[in-house]
Image (spheres, rainbow, N blue to C red):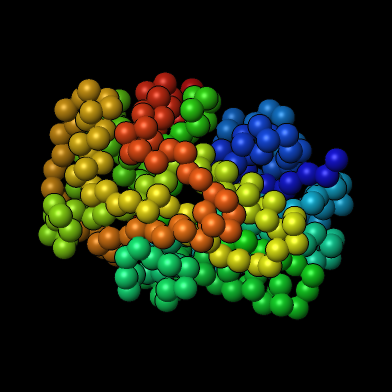
Length: 330
Ligand code: UFG
């Protein structure tokens, strides 16, 4: 039986997708350079190769050894702040890596790819909720490289036998309800894991970046989407391509926005900890409100997010963080 190749399958969203693919009965091959991913996050039934997608000989050898039916591509750097300080790292890994990958896919006749994209491709939105057809003007280098990767797929698909689905995630969060895998970044910059460091005794308070946005309580609004729901969307997107459908782009979010203060309040309820918060100046580059319209993914892919309550999402995250206060490290 052929396999799905998951690039970056040791990372946060990649590892959850691998678990869901295996639960769905698929054969999975994982490639990860372990720069930000964790070997322990890779499901034991997946075949694992440590290596870098920029290494043409390496990626060619994987396509030669394995019978790969389609690729799911998470192998990119994804920190907004870092991308502004070190843009060339992002161009090198995200763009050069994808170029090498596509050359190898075309050469080996692998013609389906599902791509991990981001709401950061939109930049400051022109309207809420955001539709896939809205303008894309990224405000950071990370979003710019993801948009360029989408365009690389488009032109490659135009010239070769290749089709792609790009999935633009909003705020990925939560952990697998099985308790085995969860969110682990070093350094951590995301709101929910940082909040949960407080009840875990690793941080005294949570900083709230900006209280003067034009929102109901002055703090930024985001669309939080559970990582297992994102994982399901990748499986549906691969099925969509397997059925011969055309290349496409889909937003993935719950379509509901929560303010930073509401997220902190929900975490207090879930953990039973007072979680002190300090209001601080705005963080550079944060849009006020990001909410997805995911109607297209629901209609065309048949995607149905299951974890649509913020409290449930934070409960799964808290289960992971309180049992793994140091992430995958002992
Ligand atoms: N925030 C705080 N305090 C913190 C951390 C975050 O107040 O300590 C706020 C941020 O200012 C923002 C919200 O919480 O308003 C969410 O911040 P995250 O860093 O968790 O997520 P972002 O919305 O900045 O980023 C996410 C993804 C990016 C993606 C971006 C746009 O992590 O990869 O959405 O789609 F680029």
